[in-house]
Image (cartoon, rainbow, N blue to C red; front, side, top):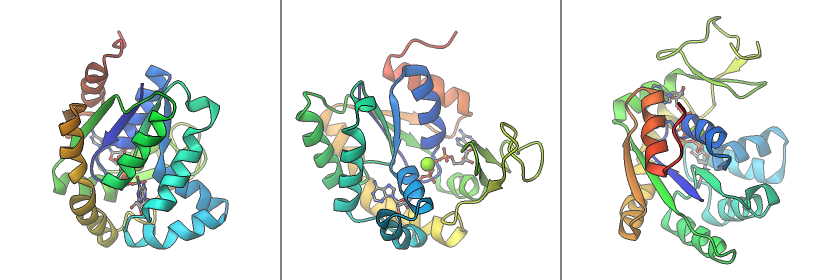
Length: 218
Ligand code: AP5
Ligand code: MG
């Protein structure tokens, strides 16, 4: 099964994808995480993406598409993927479809996470991520027990450089202009399920598990 999580910045795509991947055995593929890893490694891809990410603009389609198709060609993805942050344009969606079709696969389910704009900005402003293990916290909704340490591994927490208010507002604007057409695109294909992403994390997870037909965690 291949699943796309569609939603604005701060909707909870990364949070939910991690849990769903653990519960389903599908592989979590996040375009944003791949770019951030490339940047940490100082690769050409990372340097190329940085300018766009810092401004909250989309990285050009051909760059993202090449990166994702390369990632999903790896053997661990053969059993199915949870896509987080990709596709973000109709061109990316078509490229994904064509690539999956070559392996007799398709995008089976798209989950659209809706969350109001003011909640998104607060979630983005409050997000803190662990440098060591990648655990994600939120200083407003579920703060770490110590101010700047990770509850899971004790690692250092950091704020993403594109989580400033100005960049976050632009990311939201870019989302509305360039990504929301995908809602109708997938609705037209009959694969779209909408989930209210404003609810508590575990309630959102339960709704997604039901939408995907996964066995619920008793
Ligand atoms: P990317 O990394 O994909 O960022 P994004 O889409 O802006 O989404 P976020 O990661 O900000 O939010 P999320 O939905 O994952 O929320 P999270 O779970 O962390 O992309 C970054 C950049 O890379 C783009 O701007 C672009 O430049 C480039 N890029 C990436 N993909 C691209 C593509 N396909 N094409 C072109 N360019 C691309 O949650 C947010 C916070 O809220 C956390 O603190 C979390 O703990 C908290 N939270 C989550 N759920 C809840 C809840 N239910 N209640 C309360 N708090 C919650
Ligand atoms: Mg994310």
